[in-house]
Image (cartoon, rainbow, N blue to C red; front, side, top):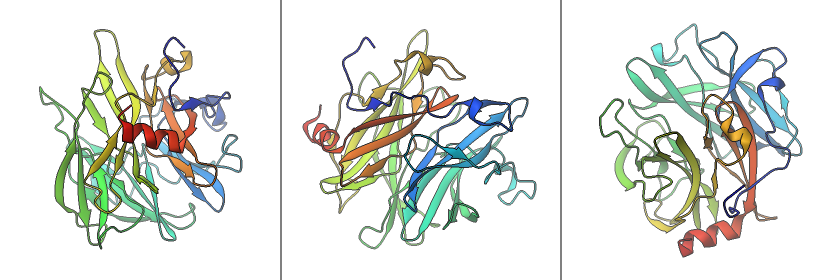
Length: 312
């Protein structure tokens, strides 16, 4: 690497999941994974596109050590022949996973020629998933739920945008709900602010810490030769998640390794969440690599929080 070290460090075994890990394939494309802890195991929701197929399917991958994963052969999401959510339920990728109590909520994009919406499901065991509802209108593909009620409401971060607009930008907004289905009280929160994210930004599932809600964001910038995706961090007030109390100016991770430029989307590192170990103070981020593989990057939780508070 030519740049200075970042606060997130790549695992030496990266990439930890590749298209070759789907023996019932062959697979061509591996998308950005949802991530959480269930029964002491690390769970990833991994979407994959098999060769010569036009739509993705999502599989559960589980691990006891967070590095070596067993991928379930039966997909949990796939192109729905019953069209439970109409024409939208056809290309399940980029799942966001939030644990609220004993239930895990999955929000993922629903794509059609009419635009991209947010579909919500819930599960208790990662075997069966119950559809909840369409929870975001076009175009809004990345609603991310907070893991608990705040002031009597459920909150989420999202990234509405306008497809095809000449000045298309993606900004982060917040909204709240009494029941996880009906959303309102929409508030603009932030837009891109520096060279690695000036084009658009987007949220992930927030992580609760003692000093605030840690929010990993992705940022997009482009040059004459390539579009670059990076990861950064902000910190939100625990009692008022619409309030930003800290922000890193630099990125936590940006595409640098050779394998991050070899794939369907070169130069892309993309996350939908993070896993914090509050005892060891480690933050794990499983991230998509060029829409082709999955990597793991880890960092010191307190260093990242301090970097947000100090504007580093």
